[in-house]
Image (tube, rainbow, N blue to C red):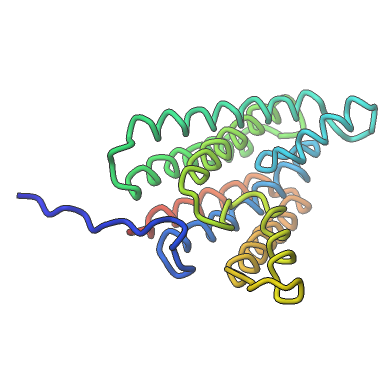
Length: 228
């Protein structure tokens, strides 16, 4: 007789040191790396932040220099595809343990980063190779966002900080609130910065491929260490 897995803690009650929360913090750091790579190194395209991407498309359509409709549309389409894949995976594995479902999605993310890094090592991303790299990164982020969305962990989306920052201010004691999950919100911002800064340094020094390797390594290490 097999021993049943321990009951899962409901997502809204997950504390900041819970294995799931720690994994999501680590993936937030990876998101900072990825957006630094895509925005600074792939023609001012976002692959994690689709709000920014929609705005970038509008800038490009208006004729603003330095922005690409094709690149942004590639990113948006790949992201939507990835989110659809995440939804399908969640539906097919609805009865499985949460950790198993997450590992499947995150392993796909690591693999896509790895392929993108291989392309960046073999071809210059200043040319046509830019588009498959954009598509791979956006596909990975779509899978990630679709998966994390289903978890429902408050203030840990791993890619978007707008609502996190809004909550940090609107729920603060200064605003008359009780400042719930204040540390989590601050850590989300800090981890995003901690990923974006070294990512920017690598890209600005012409090391996009190595930045992608770092993203794959960090995401892979997160998957390996995640136990729930």
